[in-house]
Length: 140
Ligand SMILES: Nc1nc2c([nH]c(=O)n2[C@H]2C[C@H](O)[C@@H](COP(=O)(O)OP(=O)(O)OP(=O)(O)O)O2)c(=O)[nH]1
Image 1 (tube, helix red, strand yellow):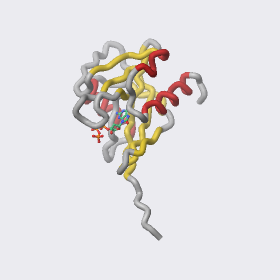
Image 2 (spheres, helix red, strand yellow):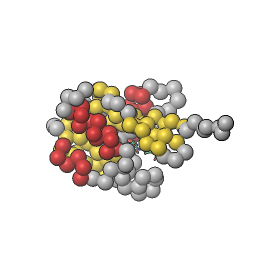
Image 3 (cartoon, protein in one colour):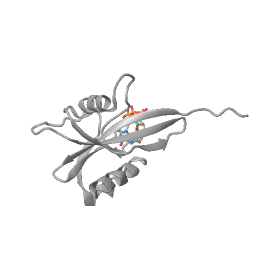
Image 4 (cartoon, protein in one colour):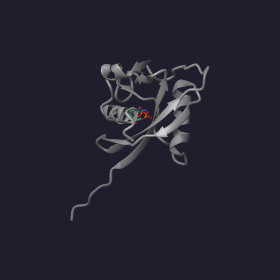
């Protein structure tokens, strides 16, 4: 029997931050992986952290704000060759008065629903958007 190698599974909690019927999306910088692709802010969960703790830490690191974390939506997986990226979206809001300061991303935008597909998304995020649209339509 050939040995089947287990792929590393990398949980990545990410935030769909809502405001006035729009969502916050951010463009990755030109230097790292998936350069200049658009994504939901967030990042890899670290050992010893819950998904929510990891998300709050990443949002503070990337946007310099304290996020209010709401509903967890179903995860989406992406085969990244040697690892499996598992995107775990949370519907979030920002407390009134919080000012976003981007530390890692190139730029950000607030997209209305009709604009969801107007940016060049990281591949896996199209599935995250589909999940979020189902949530908006109260399908779950
Ligand atoms: N935060 C976030 N990451 C995403 C999204 N879609 C997607 O494919 N990813 C990928 C990019 C990264 O490979 C990984 C998140 O890791 P990270 O935010 O710590 O980014 P990184 O550049 O340090 O990661 P790496 O690929 O260099 O290991 O998940 C998304 O919507 N949000």
